[in-house]
Length: 136
Image 1 (tube, rainbow, N blue to C red):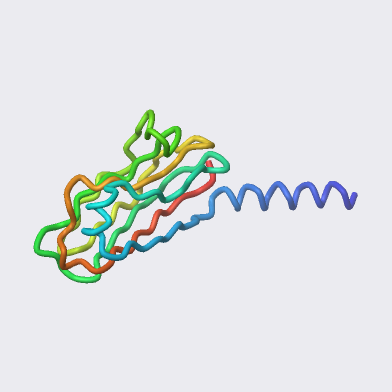
Image 2: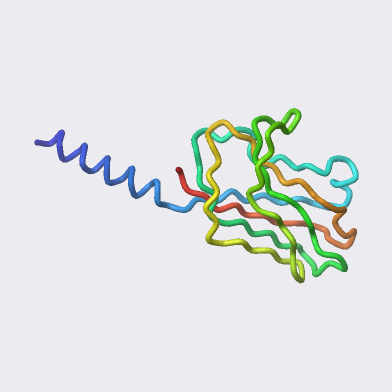
């Protein structure tokens, strides 16, 4: 009887765990200089299992003269950026971008990165980004 109770508890915990939101947060200092050297910023080298991206937020440390344009993307591998798939197109308004209610499946073993579409304004000292996800 104890084994069955344990299995039921583990099953319930696994279900609750799959529905729980998780976050990956990262910061970029001086994104204009970063863009000059590499307009692609790696976020997650390889997803260890399938995930569902549910939200993306990006905030600048100041309201920029020109807004940040970037794409959050996943692909097969960081080297070569093969088989790109768009997760969210980022376009800030007054230095902030938020996309909630997303439902983008990212298969196991994929690389996630942020690719700037234009050079960020030099007045931005730091960008803070958060990706919300659940296990798929």
